[in-house]
Amino acid sequence: MNINITLGQYYPAKSPIHSLDPRMKVSLTVLFMVAIFVIRNFWGYAVVAAFILVVNRLAKVPLSFLLKGLKPLRFVLILTFILNLFLSVGNNVLWSWWIFTITEDGLVNALHFSLRLVFLVMGTSLLTLTTTPVTMTDALERLLSPLRKIHFPAHELAMMMTIALRFIPTLLEETQKIMKAQKARGADFEHGNLMERAKALVPLLVPLFVSAFRCATDLANAMEARCYHGGENRTRYHVMKLCKTDFYALAITAAMLAAIILLNAI
Image (cartoon, rainbow, N blue to C red; front, side):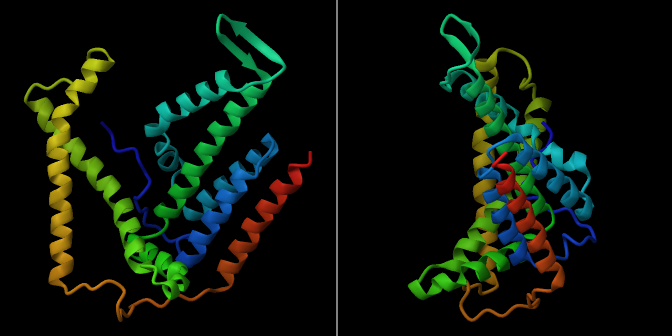
């Protein structure tokens, strides 16, 4: 089992994307997600693909490393494509056999939803690959801080979201260690039918849950030992300031969204 999930991992590098204000990166990621959901034709996906390639090149993250994050989603992508392909209703029938029918609208919907999922994963992965968990927490807290007026726990929510993202690669690494230990004791996770392979994974769950609770307990004890009290009267070593590069990035992303809206008219 390889650790192929890039979501939650940080790729250290010196690049213009890494140096952007984390608040701006979170905002641009939200704007990027909005752009994906307003796409109505495949020209829009071409614009998004070009945008991701340019951002990935500027971030100095290997493209293979970014694409590696799509491997764990193979089953979800295939299932999404098949369900939309056969369950979408349309007039122009391309192929039909027994109860299965493929229409032109079904094929278009299958491609739309599959590409949408792919670009969503790649866009969010670029955010976490270029932003450390600490700065991500600060950015989310700053963006949610106006909600404190209605007693919304902005800092606590930001901390929980960041810790959850950070624990994804940690739990995957722990899963890999447990699988190797089980294989050394004669366990077989790669042979047999789907049901047998699912049953073979059951012995992984108990030690994995024990390890997850142990990590959570250790983290809670470490935070308590350092007198952690949430966002109450906390100061920061790094002060966030927006610069010209951040506004350039905002303008480019807004131009990408505008181009997609214009292409929807084609």
